[in-house]
Length: 267
Ligand SMILES: C[S@@+](CC[C@H](N)C(=O)[O-])C[C@H]1O[C@@H](n2cnc3c(N)ncnc32)[C@H](O)[C@@H]1O
Image 1 (cartoon, helix red, strand yellow):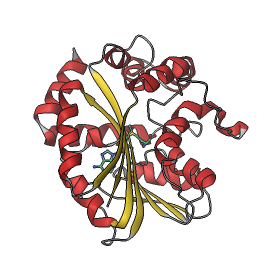
Image 2 (cartoon, protein in one colour):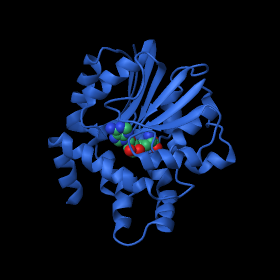
Image 3 (tube, protein in one colour):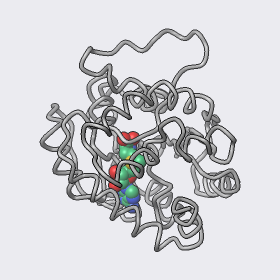
């Protein structure tokens, strides 16, 4: 009931959507849980692809990391200046810097608390975190080679305003590596926004089955993480947010009312 009300208000009132997500993520950033570095629904390969090699310390986050790997490995990142918008608790930016070795990696998030957490938790050469808004990025025109955006854009007040910023900060020839979900009714709107934004669409993939498989495989780990850190009435909210098996979010991906997409675009 509360989730339906939230989705309906978010769809109709962009100002409410922006405000509500900002409050929620500021709240989440207050949890100083060192082993919680990701906030996405994850990705699992469906066929017999070789398994991504990960250091033992990264294994717990395998599914969330695989979502980053799916999106960020679409083009070679070595020697590129990469900007991640909506970097959250920083695990994705850290993975990209350590494994895909761009020249620099900067994570931006509008939660100042999340940025402070990341600066203390992820200390890696060439990896920076700073506070900033997707709809007014604190970067010069044509100053980055790649913009990466993972499961963050559904929170924004204006997707076209964000896309304008992406086009502005990218160098000519630079890439926008993007993944997120929408309700099935809103997918056509997203598609049109991407086609109209001034970038060239290189590829588009529906990854809902991969995300669903990851939600299933990662559900037990998330339940344990929630059990260790969250108590009382907030437990149910966190289970919904994490999309554990049996949650409304999980059901929405399963019955097709939520669709998860990934895209590569070029300036
Ligand atoms: C679902 S989390 C995903 C975080 C991270 N990309 C990951 O996969 O773990 C969405 C993130 O987007 C950030 N965010 C939402 N709206 C934003 C905005 N307007 N500008 C910058 N960051 C924003 C939130 O603070 C949150 O950290």
